[in-house]
Amino acid sequence: MTHCTPAQTAVLNTLRQQNQPISAQALHGQMRTQQRIGLATIYRALDALKRLGRVQHRTTLAGETLYNTVEQDQHYLTCLHCGQSFPLKACPLKGLQLQPQPSNSFEVFYHTLEFFGLCQPCQVETTPEEKHLEV
Amino acid sequence: MTHCTPAQTAVLNTLRQQNQPISAQALHGQMRTQQRIGLATIYRALDALKRLGRVQHRTTLAGETLYNTVEQDQHYLTCLHCGQSFPLKACPLKGLQLQPQPSNSFEVFYHTLEFFGLCQPCQVETTPEEKHLEV
DNA sequence: TTAGAAACGATAATCATTATCATTTCTGTA
DNA sequence: TACAGAAATGATAATGATTATCGTTTCTAA
Image 1: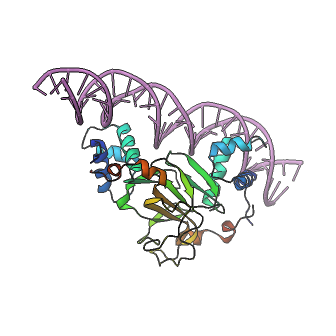
Image 2: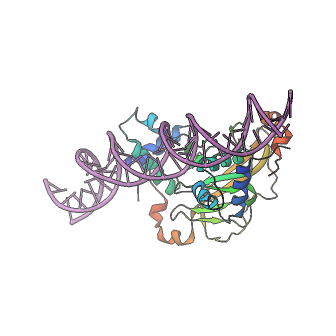
C-alpha cells in the first residue's frame, strides 16, 4: 500500500485539526511550534495531497489561498461587496443524479461549489444603480 | 446609471471575445496590440469587475489564475493526475430548487462548480494503490 | 474654464510560491 | 549489518504574479 511521506501525514493531520480553511503560511506557523518543518515542505506536501485528492484549495476574493481537507469540504456563499464567506449547511447537489457528461467515465472524487452575490447587510448598503451596470 | 470606466469596458469586451478563460497577463498581451493600456489597469479593472459580479476567476491545479465573464460561466471536470479541465455541457444545478440557507436572504448572482477526480486515460495509468492511501 | 476627483500608465515594491542544493533519511540488497 | 542509490527535507535564493506608488492625463460639475 502506497503511503504518504511523514511531512504529508503531518500536514494532513494539522489540516484536520482546523475548523476553518487555512493558508499555507499560517499552517507553517502553526506546525513549526510542534516540529521542525520548512515552508517549502509544506507547499510540497500540500501540492502532493491536492493531486491525491485529499486536500482542496480555494482563493478568496481578497486573493488569499486557503487549504482544507476534502473531508472538511464545504460550500460557500460569498458576498461580492464585503468579501465575507458563509458556509452552506448542506450541499445542494447531494443526492442529485448527475447527467451523463462528455466523459461520463470521469471518476469524481469531490467537487467545489461557491455562490457569489450580496449578503443581506450589503444588499441594503448597495444602491440599485450599483447593481446593474451599463457597459 | 452608474457606468464602468473605459478600461473596465475594454477588459470586459476583450474577455467576451475569448472562447476560453484567460490569464491577466495574456489579456494584457492581447489588448496592448489594440490600444495603449497598462498591466496595472488590467488588474484594477478585473478586480472591479469581479466585485461587480461581471467577471469570475478560477485557479488551475497548476496555480494559474484565469478570468472569464460570468455570462461565459462554465463548470469543469478537472483531472487531478494530468491537470486537464473538461467543461461540462450543462450545469447540474440548473432548475434545482435550492434549500433555504442560513442567510436565505442572500442574493445570488452566479455560482462556480468544479468536479475533481480522474479522467479516463489517467484512471488507466493510475494504479489502484495510488488511489487509496494509508496516512 | 477650471478646480478637484478619478483613472491611467509606468514601474518599483511586495510577497506567495517554486527552484535549488546540500544534508538527512529511507529502502532494498548483498 | 553495511552500504549505495533514491527520496525527502530544510534553508534560502529566485521567480513571477499582483499590488502600491506616483506623476500625468482625463473626466466632472460648478
